[in-house]
Image (spheres, rainbow, N blue to C red):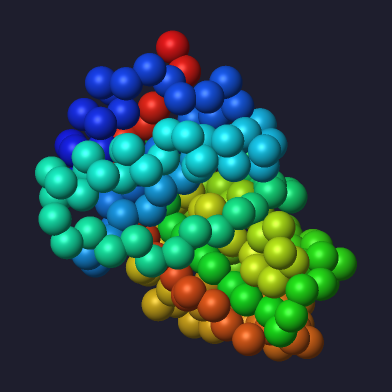
Length: 201
C-alpha cells in the first residue's frame, strides 16, 4: 500500500501550495497505516479534498483492493517537549497517543496538555528512551493527540512495563492527569515506523 501511495503521488504534480508535507507510517500491528498531512490552513485541505483527493484514492484502491479508511481527524499543534540533554538521537519509533473527552471544550484540551507536560517535566523517575512529545488539539474540541518520538519500540515497551501506570511514575501529578474530569479514553496507544515522506519540490 505504501508503494502504491508513493507511485500515485509521485506521478502527479504537487496538488496544492497549502500542502506542506504528507507522511505515511506503518503500524507495528501489521494491519494499519497512519497518514499525517500538514496544511497551511483548513481551506487548503478543503480545496484538495474537493478537486484532487478522489483520483488518488481510486488509483490506490485499484492497486491494493480491500483498503478500509477508518477515520479522519483534524488537529492543530499546541505544545511540544523535546529532550534537552545530550545529542538528539534519530527516533526509531513513533508512538501515537489518542485521548478523548466528553464533549467539546478547548479550554479543557489545553489544560490537560499543560498538566501532562507539568507531570513529564517534574517526574522523579523519567523513562529512558523518550525523544520528544508533540501535542495536537482536535479542531472539534474533543480530542488530544500526542505524536511522540522514541529511540526504539523496545524503549517504549519497557517504559510501559515499568512500575507506575503507563509512562508516568505514579506521582500525584500523573494521577491528576489520568483522572482528569471528562476524560473518557480514545484510540489508545499505537506504535509506527515512518515509511514515506513527501514534500513540495
